[in-house]
Length: 194
Length: 171
Figure 1 (cartoon, rainbow over the protein chains, first blue to last red):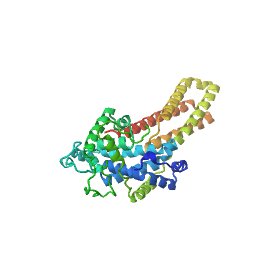
Figure 2: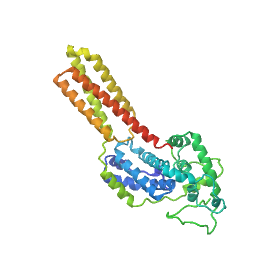
Figure 3: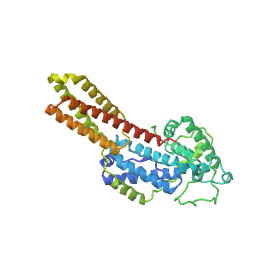
Figure 4: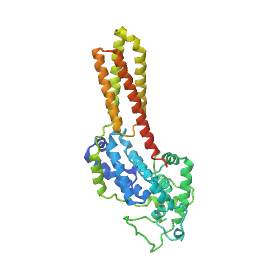
């Protein structure tokens, strides 16, 4: 999976983006659209919300690129905007209410010992826990950085992560032959093949 | 932010397996129609100019203003009565601009901020004109006072919007 930090764009492209050139805007969009959409989709669990967050992220990026202080800060800046777009939606009353129905603890059908899709297991976490796990494991945020993003203490990040690991690790089982896989609308899903 | 590399496994039970599984998740493709939506929205959005373009103009105007005021105060004895006020206003103006420059720009200016910037620019033009024509120092002082007040308003609005943005990231 490509991460924000893995994407390298020519400095000239970024400077053209800062000048508002349409072609450069499209190049930047094409380079970052999938990582932004992937994060939004994994975190928000709703394709419509993920599309909305992705679109809002790029509208902010493309219309505000002239304010970018340094060319090399582009990736981090886009990621910050994308994370904020996801966090905004996760804290909306509608999403929080839906999230309340989910629980950080495993549910009955998840404790059967069968191979469980890690993505499905992620979906069983609360939005906050999912976000903490993603930022820490995929984007490499430190606990201090996660705490700052949530406006909480580092111990909040640590405790959320520890609980999430317990839940996810319980469902990371070797894939057995013929396990139910690939039923979602995503192109593919990775199982906990360890 | 830190290096933002994927986490190295720690000693937490299952962490290595979970990290490996999470990092093996495939990237999802953003639907093609999203770009069309983004393009339509940025085409519909009003052109945003970087505020940093405003700062040098404001600084240059302040410097010119200060220099011209200094000359006038030196050559017009009648103006000396208002010198402390004008000096204080100039100092306050410079302080507010320094505060704004020291604060990172995270948002493009809103409509209200643009209006304030335009009004400040207009006052600068009036002040320069008055200085060149050598008109009433009382009027200049009033303009200068209004300029400082507008700058303060602008600073507060920018600070409010910035705080609001940061709070959006907080549950």
